[in-house]
Image 1 (cartoon, rainbow, N blue to C red):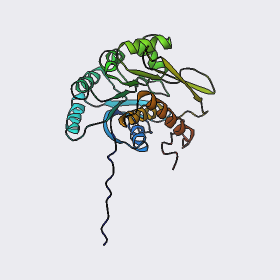
Image 2 (image 1 turned 180 degrees about the vertical axis):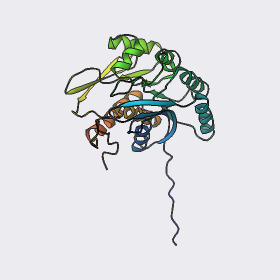
Image 3 (image 1 turned 60 degrees about the horizontal axis):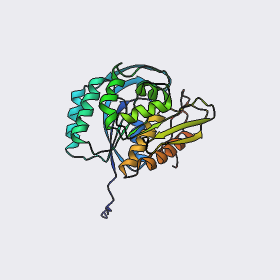
Length: 268
């Protein structure tokens, strides 16, 4: 039998993904697919296991924060992530535990926070009521790029005014915010990237497709983390990730479900 030659390949950038598990294709599965599609390896920690599909939500079981910390400690003995993507943090205790670990051990690592507070389709609560305050106090000061939708932006910025909310979040220490889907326009989507008062804001307009797609926020935030892991700037990462997420939705797959599933390998 002939020997198989193994070529030395450049190691893939590592993205530490801390997120919830959604059986219907959002959450951690969307994160893993996005990392793979963008040439990165996902190191995964699950924060909560949910019972849901693309149209309805029933319940969840949160992972014990001490067990999550045990996983994290052991994982970091072997790996040194190039970026971190954080999705669903289900409760305040986990937020404090996770932020404390990051501050002590991973403070130089770029962090993308997708501040999941409710389910996208049914608007069901996924966190305890104190979590937004805990995010503001403990996690936003550590965040490189925050990716809230309109609802999440208002909650974290404590105002319905988009630009006031962006300003308040910046004052908490968040380096940049990419706020998504800020209008109810039927044909277009508006995203705004804010990088503080000194660098102003950038508006992105793109076509809105008629189908609702499941897991777009996870896809976008993970794609940003991948670009940051490759050493790209915040501006470059935001632009590239939006294009990737938009094309994933454009070529999304329908399974006769309430929402389509983004095709994160749309070129195959």
